[in-house]
Length: 183
Image (tube, rainbow, N blue to C red; front, side, top):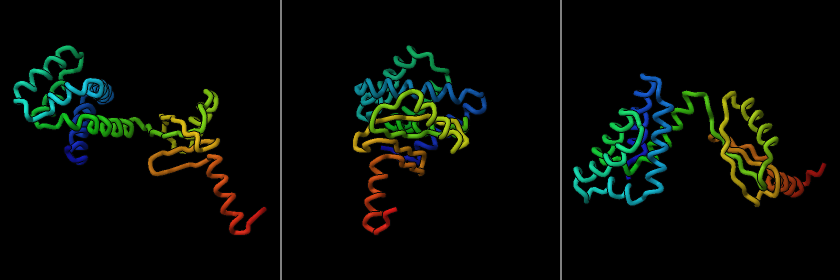
């Protein structure tokens, strides 16, 4: 596995090219599509990233896939470069970092929302507006469920955690009772 520092360097390079021609978001979508393809076709990724196979054979396999894609030539060349430098094994990490950089440029932040039960559309809309007001950025929410919260929501934005769960409230109440602070 290559280091995250190297993955960041490749992601930044593609982003830089995308900023010059104004297509960095499209390049990110193309990377996501390729990464999804690799995830669902593990054998393909193993072949093109395995040094046991000759480079020319790996290039031919990659070319078959690239010919069937409608990726811009920049993205195709980027993927060829990753193969040449034995970096395709880190395509997921490179794609994830590219997405983070793209979000920063687009004034978008990602929030992980954990709820005890599925949230209704109205609640999601209100939560999205509240988080936008809090962060002054467009917020993309990734929602998952965790029944152990009992009720309420837990929101993680970067290093910030907003815990409005019933579980946290009960824990706070328990601590207050231990200290003798019952109002």
